[in-house]
Image 1 (spheres, rainbow, N blue to C red):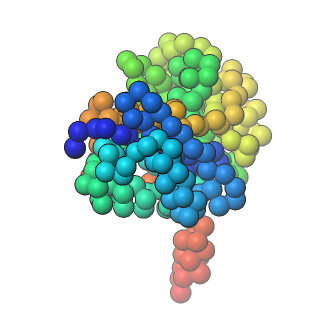
Image 2 (cartoon, rainbow, N blue to C red):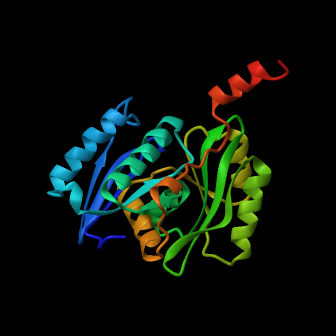
Length: 242
């Protein structure tokens, strides 16, 4: 990895998409707005605007960090391709940041919460759950992300409570989380919190990965998909048995 002058990071996986960078002690963030916020045209327009705002040349970028999901399929496709393209063109390594850690850090920055269950990609009574805990200056997954319902949520809550971590434990989720899961969270004494991922949190978690030397070759970068894309499901259904 070449000497770090600028850390570039972006998250197109959630509703609040953003592109951000940090140079020395200064951080800059731009939110991606509108119905096309997760598309490549908006992303590259905002990226150029961010570099101009920060007075940064592309050649100054030292590492690229990207939120790898789960989340928007379009956002994941665009962001993974962009991270690979930018890093390869500039001869850089990449940092693959789980979106759950970004959500957990956003809440920690706002309220000091040290333990969170993050529910992403909610759909039809299930979600992708990750039990996140902040220890020794960084986030880790006490229970690795997996898709499921009430049983998976309970497994995450039990694991976090068993560590003796500071209470309360938060359940971070979007507006699509099923009412059954919200009711179960209340019975488990979890505190419901809205998803609030932001660029500063993304930069913070990316720095944790960088300090731990957890970078990848761009071609090793993979998204986290919570479930099979709908187009693949339809294709398989049409061709099964026939």
